[in-house]
Amino acid sequence: NWKTVAEAEKEQFRRLALFNAYCDREKNASLIKYDFIAHTDTVASDVRLFLTKINATVDNDVLPEQRPRNADDDRVFSDIYRQVPMDDILALRTIFQQDFDMFGYSFEQDLHKILEGRAKG
Image (cartoon, rainbow, N blue to C red; front, side):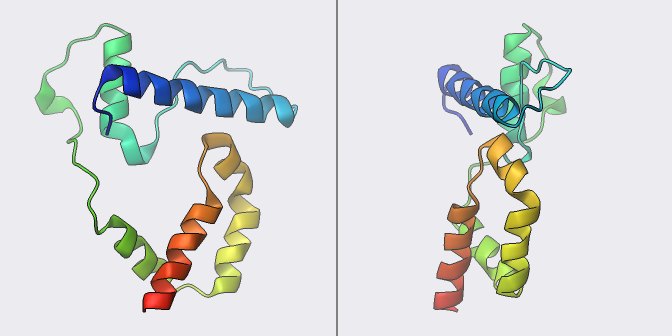
């Protein structure tokens, strides 16, 4: 969740830059010229930024609930993936690496959380 509109706009600029760089690098230019990319993990903040950018006013009751990141989120993540065989997790890297690159996620960070959880667990 972004504390200010400026922080949200900076993140949106980063997302668009990553997406456009990926398309350029892969020679996979989209026919659609995107000007906004929302992530499901930050959708509440992303919707608010989008509405601000288009100068829309909406009743807060219809917007997704903004909830702060829970300190247990990483633990829950590692607990779930601790049950998945490592060969399957590494296969997911191959399958979804393009998505990780295109949307600015890090498989290595997620793998680190999984390995930490296994070491504790």
